[in-house]
Length: 490
Ligand SMILES: Cc1cc2nc3c(=O)[nH]c(=O)nc-3n(C[C@H](O)[C@H](O)[C@H](O)COP(=O)(O)OP(=O)(O)OC[C@H]3O[C@@H](n4cnc5c(N)ncnc54)[C@H](O)[C@@H]3O)c2cc1C
Image (tube, rainbow, N blue to C red; front, side, top):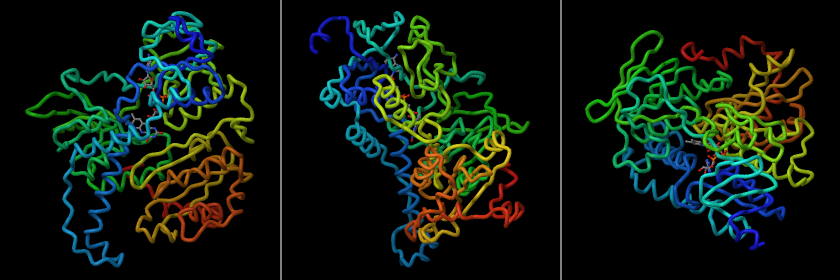
């Protein structure tokens, strides 16, 4: 084995490009299957730098704690039976402590630690990859000629065009708050993605004045009735939400920035201490030499077949570089799936229904949002007859007990009761959605969800109650009254 790696030309079974979520999962799975693996990554592995996702969650958890603390000292919480003599909460963020926490977690959770990779006999090379032929690539002076490639370079913030004077400002990257000297006083976020909404709420809860600007609508493609409780809460907490707002100009102003935008035909002028981009990232397809490798791609990502093979049969692509909805879970799952395909590991991800694992979509706001499968409008387009079943957390013992009963569970089925999609907005939605992801991947019916009795009190009871709901008996008008979408969010 060592002989293979001593020469400048490496000939492993598999070469993985990119040691992010997808690449690491593919490399681990291939090594577990006994394959000889080379993993190439341009950054230094295990550099202790928290990933954007980790930094965001450290921030969100700190903000949740701040919000809980704040509400413990608020008079409303006397209803919990606690006589509170705590001092009123005042948010003071210790950035250095946040940074230490993020770095500690990054090193504890480091799947890309060279020691672990070494132990699995995965050969790592630090360098930027470029294909020089259909079966060959180069990195850090090595030529690599494997039997198969897995490409997983991820995505990067899309270049901003069409905003005047943008070249004179340096927006913050989502994880860059860890390196700030002072907490942002007035933060403007550009891009109403799920991460944008979560970051906006977190910064607001930690004391910043926050404006979130989005050229279209927040979370397009998701059911508006599930998005509305999030927007309502953010507004109640003081986040300024600006939908259908096009930024036209950003320029340095005094010690901060001035932002000029147009909202519904009217001018909007904002001043900010910091600007952060939360626009959807673009797949990293340039600079890899994909044309030399015979891999079809465009700016929206690498083109793959259902089995994730590219136009070059020896090259697979996974993760954010494919474009579309991005998540750590789907990149990892795709990494394991391609390895199972390449090395013919069976049965793997065998499902009765679609053949592919169901990808969940989550937004880490409070209340949380999580969904799997089709939204109601997608289901209406692809099916002639659908049914929508709902249950509110207001009718759920556990949610009411915790004082977190905003939101509801929504099940969408076809006329024969088969589940097409599930959306949840409310407490612990990201945990609750797992059951429905499994149900969808197995082609289950709503009736199957009536076949078990969850613990009481538990949030899962809301899902069971939704499966028992009979929308026909209640009629549309009543549902609209119970789950209204305020005019401003329609
Ligand atoms: C702020 C933020 C928060 C997020 N939060 C979440 C979350 O909570 N949950 C969730 O599921 N997802 C989250 N995501 C999305 C998630 O991080 C991505 O979907 C996931 O990391 C994609 O995995 P990947 O393997 O495709 O790419 P990445 O994890 O980005 O890895 C790509 C790797 O390839 C390397 N690379 C790139 N080009 C080359 C080259 N030419 N040569 C060598 N190496 C190269 C890069 O250095 C990188 O290490 C978040 C994203 C952001 C920006």
